[in-house]
Amino acid sequence: GQQVMQIPQYQHVQEGEDFTTYCNSSTTLSNIQWYKQRPGGHPVFLIQLVKSGEVKKQKRLTFQFGEAKKNSSLHITATQTTDVGTYFCAGNGGATNKLIFGTGTLLAVQP
Amino acid sequence: GAGVSQSPSNKVTEKGKDVELRCDPISGHTALYWYRQRLGQGLEFLIYFQGNSAPDKSGLPSDRFSAERTGESVSTLTIQRTQQEDSAVYLCASSFSQGSNQPQHFGDGTRLSIL
Image (cartoon, rainbow over all chains, first blue to last red; front, side, top):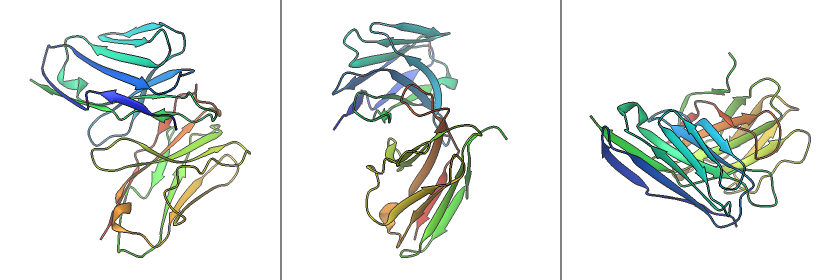
């Protein structure tokens, strides 16, 4: 079945450093969504990318969808302690309508 | 409230007991999802209700797990004869319509602990 993997599984950075998480699918995706889950919280939708090669920005966050629509990345510039949490990508490349969530990347930011 | 509501927020029960978890989706959302999240792990898809279509039960781990949804409203997830490996946070999410291009809105989850 379709699999969505993320790397790294865990990243620890100093506040102010940049951070990137990568999302890779075993199948071509129709779209990719990104979610953030704060410690003890629930996932919250951040953004959706649909077009091949699409790039979207939200303040310090930059999201990219690969040309082949099989991978995506989330880059955070100058991390802050409020960025702490687990970032999940989610996509659909199969015959059903359901999203498949990636394995997640836990970001820790040291002040 | 405007968000997805789940109850109870915490449930502690003895091994072998049945439990019922409830999810109230956002009004007007036709799609509803249940996920399981073990400590420090990702989201494990359980079941997906899409309007009046037959639900996608492909993620249910065993026949001890079942879920129902009445129309486009409340859903209940039932776990029979609970086992210790069922301990996890059970998350419910809803979206405006069926289709993977819709953002999912999550509830706070039910933290289930099996003694």
